[in-house]
Length: 155
Image (cartoon, rainbow, N blue to C red; front, side, top):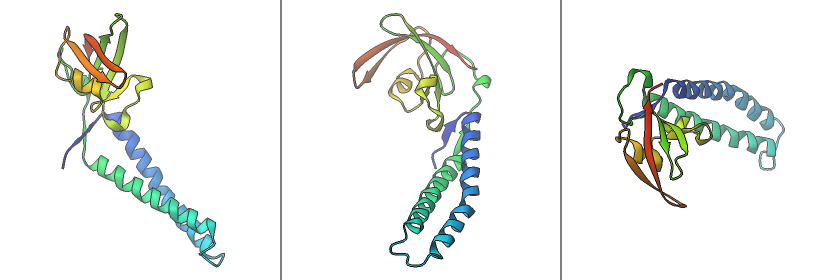
């Protein structure tokens, strides 16, 4: 089984979501029972909607249980150095010397708008293993981009 690296806050988010979905299970069962009481199931939209929701919730629970069981929680504050690794907050300079800052995180916690990119993203893959002062080339749908690694922090 391959470990799923993530930060502690990402793990907490997954476990909170898992608890909420588990708490929703009895409500779905009640909705199915109530819809079943209405009679003919072949034309009972409420019954079919409740059964569909039950399938979605069970699939989400299975996915979250899998991720949390394989979670490898990494605390970036325990890391140091000038090489880019999982959990690092990296400031890069683009072609116009504009600074861009990203933290390399696990897939469940990635949010590009907040500057958090998945370790599987093209930019993160290009950055991991590199040091301050290195130039990286990233191929994105709009073409090739070049970045200069300016700073590496572990916060």
